[in-house]
Amino acid sequence: MNLFLDALAWIFSPDRLSGSNAILMRLAEHLYFTIISVAIAAAIAIPVGYLIGHTGRGRELAVGISGAARALPSFGLILLLVTIMGVLQVQAAAIIAFVILGIPSILAGAYAGLEAVDRRTIDAARGIGMTEWQILWKVEIPLGLPLLIGGLRNATLQVVATVTLAAYVALGGLGFGIIQGLALRRFDQMLGSAILIAVLALVLDGLFALIQRAVVPHGVTAAQGSGSLLPRRRALT
Amino acid sequence: MNWIVNNLDLIWELTIQHVRLSIPPIVLGFIFSIPIGWFAYRFKLTRGLILTVAGLLYTIPSLAMFVILPAVLGISLLSELNVTIALTVYAVAILARSVADALASVDPAVRESATAVGFSSFRRFWRVELPLAGPVILAGLRVAAVSTVALVTVGILIGVQSLGYLFTNGQQRGIVAEILAGVVMTMVVALVIDAVLVVLGRILLPWARMPSSPVREAPPFPPVALFAHPISPGQGQGQP
Image (cartoon, each protein chain N blue to C red):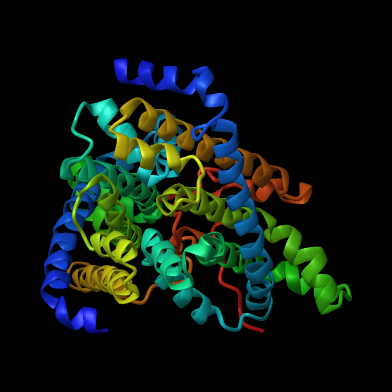
């Protein structure tokens, strides 16, 4: 347990307020890259996911792309892009890598959210005279929101983890403490940074869990059980 | 491309090493997740606890896990054992939920019939419930296997050799082909292991292909869970 005391002492040392291991600065870097990357990934993946979910077309393609992306080693992708684009473009290269890694989860969340909507609900909406556009905005998107948030949650955690690895290419972030600690053989610094990274991931995960709960429309409390989270395959229109 | 042609031996050697590192966490994760998943399925109290802990563990980024685990377990940071244990933890975190969901998906009528014809609960589990849960567990196992193969590469940061060596070495030397070879070979290893699992599933679970009525069909694995973060603790995903 001494190791953990040392790590806590490292975290709460006054030296952490400034310098190369200033925790707030490293945290800000970490969040900056995470938020910007997830936002770009969402701007790309949500419209495409909704198109696939609403029309039912291109589903196989999306599943295939997402499946292949899961096998993509994130650390390799960052180093590949950084090496191709050059040292001067490290930030841009890393953000492109984060965006690529964030897209599959969000895409899946978006189209799975729409697919999970009960076919009869959509027929009912059409039956009372809603246009396709109204069905999308007033029925499918609100009902699919919890799964979309779930996708954003997965993407965010993936990106937080990958930003940690990006410290290897001098991008900063909380991973810096681990990479530098490895080189300097300073275990208190490594463990302190690792704890901060784990806490960051857990806090973000918890935030998304709360949002996910909050966006469930009032009318669907009955469907809150696990059943509502399992997408039902929709008949293709 | 010259680099690849001149270094085929190195790439091959690292690929073998990568496969060697990938298999123990997948196998151990599978073995441990059966009893853990059963506990989560069987008792309401343990279900919430196990699935929450699994979700939280899966949330911790891999590099942080590689640093925290040795401190908790008192093992060496720069060791293969560390990587094996960390990746086993991730695999169990993914699979515990799959096993619990899979067991819950077994038709209660089948369970009752098995009891009625005289199966003890122990034999019923091994002879009836587990085989019928097989296809859903296999879906989870494929997710765990592919993510394990990808995560092995991170081990290079703590000095454990794998195809990840081609990433760091290629980056330091500025050889794009070397990094690309590492990325492509990692994906090939993942796809080959995935294919092996599919074939094993076909051989060991022939009933998975039998047509069944839509009502009885095992619930599809949630698509969201098919990606990098298969566990959604909010429903009840996570990380490298």
